[in-house]
Length: 221
Image 1 (cartoon, one colour):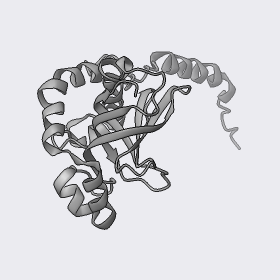
Image 2 (tube, helix red, strand yellow):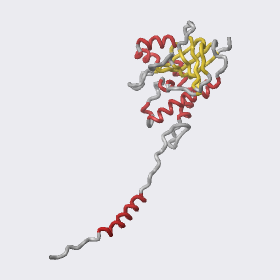
Image 3 (cartoon, one colour):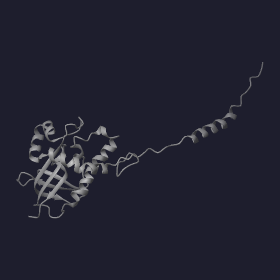
Image 4 (tube, helix red, strand yellow):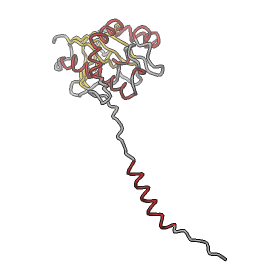
């Protein structure tokens, strides 16, 4: 009976380990490019510059033409949001998105919060002494109502959701920089206010939350 050769299996382990080590060393882990918008990124996307470029030429004229008096917009929105959207909103919005309306708010300031970074002022539109709308005066502002009110801005025009979100935030930042930061902050109650802006119908709100594109506060009474 012939003896079967015994292969030196253990001797191959260092060779296999060496080969595996060479394979791993040849692989490189590349960093994922940042998709943050901010002031600009490696791809050249700069939401702040994009908003600045269209603000006076397109955004303000669009809102001025599209906006309705707050009382009219709100009354129609309460009964028929689709009809209000067709008249004052963005009919090209994504189907699952809430309606956003362009609006003019004019009345007396009955309350103001200027201690928080998310500052607001409450406006009595109909003269009954009660607030009808809440105006964001920054510097921090919620939502993307200004972006969402524009029918010439579409999600499919952007590379991804993050860029689209950064573009929405850039509207708020530009409004604060050019308009809201220049408003008075002291003794606001009792003054008159005029606002051109947009708001989104959302559940759970005490008052419609309007983001201004233009704002003016009258003198102390």
